[in-house]
Each structure stands twice: as structure tokens, then as C-alpha cells.
Length: 431
Image 1 (cartoon, rainbow, N blue to C red):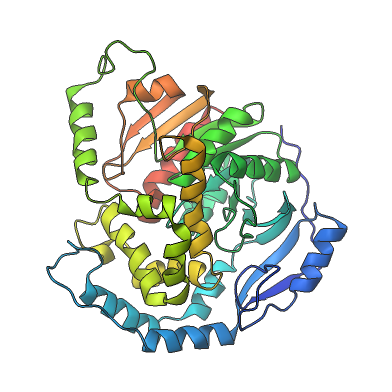
Image 2: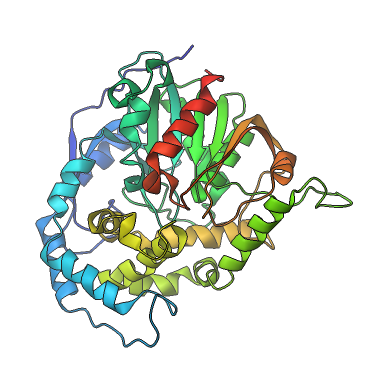
């Protein structure tokens, strides 16, 4: 069924990250050893799949410790995150980050997975390619969003690739491909304007083709859902199915009564989610209009970066105000670290700008037609938006629609067991 290639790298490329993924104009302290060899190899054979290991330099970590020790915290009025990130919680988090957090251990855990890079559209794209021990596993492309990263998938990689070792069935196995989006983490930062969701979708479809996967599934939340939708639309010939934990759907075009077929329960849920976001969308205006201005602060202050990112985890997860009932400090900080050590907070925010410019009046770009490949919606109750099924059916070929009992925006990170089981169930009939 699958045309697969054994991925063989030309040597093991150990990249010590001083300022993140190597950039032509980088002059930041710390340097990048091995970057020249990697660049030369990519020029000789741009299609090469090159093994990659995360190895942040001691200089970068020392600089981080100094910055954390010199953090100037603002004053605060009000409590309970009403005005934004709570200053007492941030003090506690920064203190832990400075005194107890062990990046080397987190780095070791990340490096347990198989990391690679390859050059597509003149950008080095980083990805985890975790192959299943089951030979007939279905390839699955899984995509993160903002303010997340590949860290979100650390709890689901094992169960998806090796279900037998995690109490599942061999026939539910996947070969998992989890890229860092361009401008995020260890992938290159785009050097020219115009890298929006459609363009990123094209890059990921090329990645799956380069891995010689003729038929694959795709899964995503946040930007990963936007991009996966584009992939399913444009590469439908090769996409077996589309699984979303963030379903975007507007009222059916031309419908005389857009509320026809919408149940009272769906309407109430949709209105409740809209109300909860009334004071929570300012970040989209900033990142969608002036990401560069924002980027100076995020790139210079680790405490500022953590405040900007962690506030969204607090607001968007199903934690009832208790963030650490869902995420540990280590989990939160490791996700932040992927932005800090690669200096990608600004380039990641620019995706909002690019999408906004390409979408016209809206924020999110969408294909011009209906996605016809089988599509699943996994609806977590604290997701940012939950459309009625009838609206979704106007935009996707919905074949599975699951109301989850708990969970929010970061499904793989918050409720890995629920997401894994839904992904397995959806793809059983599509293999």
C-alpha cells in the first residue's frame, strides 16, 4: 500500500544551537557549530534527509540565566489573571526556571525521538519522523500551532507509533511525521514575505512526498488545523483523511436560514465559547498587524516571552484556573524554550500577519472549496470555537464527530489519551 524509503542521512549532523536555526545574517553570541557542513550538504543535495540532534550551547543557557536573574517585574492590580498573566505566578515560574528547571534533561527527552531536517522551498524544515515497529502502519502528518510546538506531541508519539506497547492494537499504528512549522522551533525562519498557511501546506505535502509516502493522514489543531485543511484540499489524491481538534466553519454560503439544522445545544455552546473569547483576542490584532514591534520584547526578555505564551495556556486549557492541574512547569517551560533558544517568537507571530493579508477581511485563510476527503472533528469542550455540525458539513466531508468529555485547545498536550483514541478510531476504516 505504501511506497516507503528507508531514510538514510549522510552522517550525523550535530547542531549546537547558539541563536537557533542558522540564518545567513545571524551575529548573535553562541554560534552554531556544524551549520556550515549542514548548509553545504543541503546545497549539494537539497533533497537530502539529514539527521538532527538538539544541542543548545552552554553560552545560550548562561545568557538565559543572567536574563532571568535580572527580570524586572511590573506592578499589578487585580488578581486571578484578569489583566493578563498573574505577576505572582510569573515570579514563581521564573524562579523555578532560573533555579530548578533542567534544560539538559528536557533536551534528552526530546532527543529520544528521531529528528531530521531537509530543504524545501529554500528553507531547512525540521521534523520528527518516528516510524512504527509495525510495517503496515499508516503515515500520519501531525501539525502544531501557536503558541505551541512539537513539545505538544511528546505524550502521543509513543501511543500512535507503537500502540501495542501502550495497550492498543498493532493495526492502529502510525508512522508519525511531526514538523516544526517554518518560522517555528528548529525550522528556518522565512526570509521573504508571503509564507502563509497555504504555502506551509505545500511545504508539508512536499515533505510527505519526499519521504515517499503515497498515502497519508493528517491531523492538526490551531494553525495545524488551518494548514491540514489546505493539505487535504490541495493534496486530496494522497490524503487518506483529515482529523481536526480545532474545527473552523462559517455558516453555509447562500443559506437562507444559516441556523436551520442547528440544535439548541449547539447554539448555546457556540455562544458560550464566543462570549469566553470576548476579551481574549487582542493578541491576534497585535501579531496580525505589528508582529515585528512585539518581537523585540519577546526576543529580548525570557520572562516577557513566558508571560505572553503561558497566559494563552492558562486561558485556553480546561484547567478551571489551575494551570498546573494540567501542565507541569517543566512542560510549560520546555515549550517556551523552543521559542527562546531558536529566537523564533517574532517569525512565529508573523504567521498571523501573513494569514491576515491573504485572507482579506478575516484572519484565517481557507480553501476556495469543500474538503472532500473523509474528515473527523474532535470537539473538546474548552476549544476556542465549536461550530455546529451542519456548518462543518458545508466545508468538510464529515464522517466522524466526537463530543469530548473534557479538554481545551491543546488536545495532544492536555488530553493525550482522548485524542489518541479518536485518531485511531477515525483511521481504522481508512487504512
